Amino acid sequence: MGNKPGVLILIIGILLAVDVLLISRYASWGCTLEELIPYAFFLLLAEFLAVFSVVKFKQFINPFTIYSFFIYIAGFSFLVISDRQVGYDLNFILIITLSIASFIIGSLVAMKVFAFNFESILPPLSQRISLFFLLFLFVAGIGVFILEVGQLGYLPVFNLANAAVYEDINENEVTPLHNFIVLNSVLPAMFYITYKKGTIRFWQFLLLTFVCGFIILNFFSRQIIVLFFFSLLMAYSYYKRIPILKLFSIGAVCVVLFIVLGQLRSSSDENANSISVNDFLRDYGDITKPTNILETYLSLYGGVNFSAGDAIVHDAIRDDYVSYGAYAARPVITFLPVDKNAVYPLLYSSYTKIGTYMIDPYLDFRWFGVIGLNFLYGLFSMNSFKNYLSKNGEYYIVEWSLFIFCIFMCAFTNFFHMFFVAFFFIVNRIAIK
Image (cartoon, rainbow, N blue to C red; front, side, top):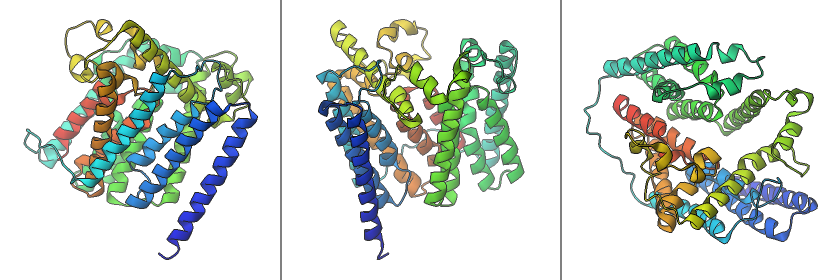
């Protein structure tokens, strides 16, 4: 116990030393002060938030540590590394700043007040009926998987040598029933809960998890595989604490898997195998600086995405476009018999253009949306984490996993309002009490 202040000081010292090296590295690339100052600010903010939250919660995975990745990426995006990047308008800089500040404030408020929950209008299911319900969803997912593979004509995971496999998957027509396939990313966590309750045996849990993993692996969707890992990790750590070194090891495996899957997806290009992964991605992303593989990904999924977000905001202001809550209401609108392209014009689509999660709140309600919705994201995320941490019920295993996923994907698009996320919340509410 007496060594903890010393360890904390050592960690802060190491972080500051790394910060100096990073800033020096990017300055040597010719990055200007206009790029380096915001980068340094968000870098220090991300580190402070992460260290503070780990010390506060004694948990490496919490809303602040996950969100700190987004904060760092936001800062990194100010470094003009790719020719696809643009300098940000003042409006977009304010959106970044207010989004981050509002999320943090919402989380801090949730830390100070008691943890709340929403009462279910549905009666709790018995353990056996809950298992039958989950098995029904599991079988439904297998059925939809068979239909989609039949349309495709082959199993993708067994045809990795096929250069066009990823394009074939993207072009394969899917229906809303595809959500039953995506559900396989959280079903293993729910089956683990049933195993811990004694409803199924461990070998049955392993078999069900293997089938779920095999199904989602066939679609090479990195975000869904990330959710698969997060939900299983949170289910396991709910019952047994995971040492930090093991968490780092798991994180390293996830990073490697992310890169490997990216290479598999990129292998459809006939020239991809003739150069290194990093060189291929740098060419693909029009990256002009001598980046390593991590910096290349940060540019592709950071700077380029933020520049896309800046362009969307610019177009929305120019056209005086406001959606008045359409993006926040996406789970409901998905069910309505309306033209989705009219409701969500492609020109302003942060989902299609991958313009970060910040765009939808701005398009919905302008500055009120930026401040209000980000405050709610932080509030509900931290509240879910507190319920999970206090072990207020197994229900919070999947709920907290979904919030982790949404926060982790902030640099891509707004998953807080995606239909499949709402669908998972509903399934979790019905099956787990």
